[in-house]
Length: 207
Length: 301
Image 1: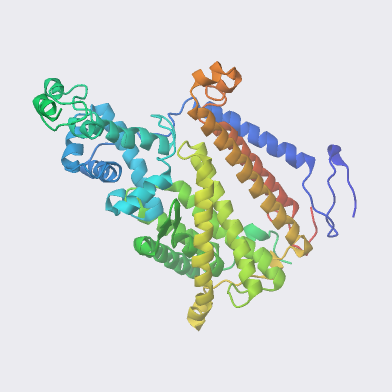
Image 2: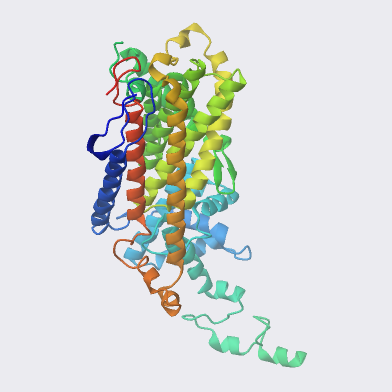
């Protein structure tokens, strides 16, 4: 085994079957490569948009996917989910529809990659499993974050917001007059704990 | 010896007639596409882990029929997905790495024990397969998780954990069963021309095999560990509002949330880490004469 000491390295000649090892030169070159990649990535990210899909349209299949997500995340007491979600999506602005559709595409892509089927085609149990696998139950919510964060923001939270700001959904929480919906006078006729049991006279008679 | 390159590059240009290569690649593409359509029946979901047949089929293609079959499988995978309107490039890159690496690791480990034919008929073959499949699966999953991180799609952690475990289990279980059955199915003469046995002259690295396999494992472990810690750190900091950090005198931590070098959840750090580890691994393969070097019997650099 012949030791060579070229350019300050402890490179060892392995021609006779001796030790083979990485040299300091290899380590420095690797660090330079990594640092260079980071700098290039940093410059690139200042021009990028976080990897969102532009120009996604809200097709019937994507509305169906939103309904499929709602089937999983909405309480079992809620009925008429398809009509509600379809009507709710119709209220979105064009830009909102595009960003929500973009997140739906990402979710569908993930379902296809891991399960081999569109999210819409999966059973409710498998949809629940896909949502947990993608991490939406434990990630933060961000409009320009990673796929789980965008799915959480544009799909899960959007659907929950739609439900719980409607009279049907807020009623599940005991709020009879959500902001933006009429019905305040009626709610004032009920007892605070009676929900929609009846007018205030009925509450008085129980007393 | 005639060969002037060895290891990975040698496998990539392993001798196969043009018609044979087309036959093998087309067959692998069809089998992969067929598996994709049947995989819902063969997929088991255990929490976030999804154990499916596709990684096993691609690993078997690499082990039994070589790189040509792996490339054919990837073409079949991408073609089938494109017909559905999806272009999962990082997943395809991961499968490509899996198919090539599992053959590479088996070739290096297996030929040391004279296991020139990929099959499971003894305990030594079983352990060789499990080690090769685990290393290849974790390497491929790490590459994919890194790709998702640097493109801003999924965080490195827990993607590397869930994908790594799922892919390892898929390959070890599905590939193990396939490798135990395949020699019987492929025992007929008409298959023999397609099956590519391992040539110890090309793959055997002498007594250095344990060293560079261990080094590969160390690089992989370091990448997964440092990448996961970095990813978890940025996810935690991201969840804490800046107000709470400032209130507790932890203003410097706001730097990790603010725009600048650490924006994007540490993506730039992950990019640098991944390139550094892959460069080191590549240099180590060169030092061990596995890529770009000369054949074991020739002169060294």
